[in-house]
Image (tube, rainbow, N blue to C red):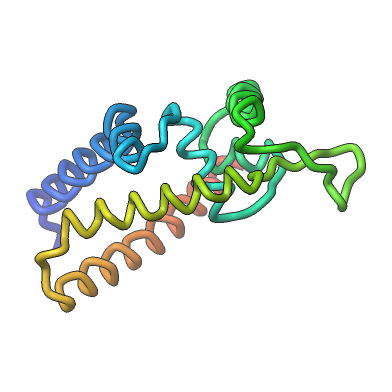
Length: 157
């Protein structure tokens, strides 16, 4: 049986966490603690490129949930800063990939360190069991979210 109060509390908590973690001030402050001064969209792009490697701008746009014109602006800023570069796509000579430069890879690693430091600050006093419980439950929640989202996509296609 559904408990609407618990569902509402969960939704409210998730919205609060997502709003905080995705707020421009929060993202830039976390990065700035490690000496990284980038705009929020660039932080997200560098993090994605660092995690997933070189990719087409359209793939990056999908992963960032934004449009092609916005990715073009982000890519230009990253290229101008020497953080990213365009490479020829080996699978399609008409396409290009956006990749991190060596400096960009260093920045991505620093952002990972910054994120790890933040998580330690947030849950460092928790027991190992509590941290594992959180990870297991969030992983299950992510799997179910993706399953439901895939169903929405099928319904709308």
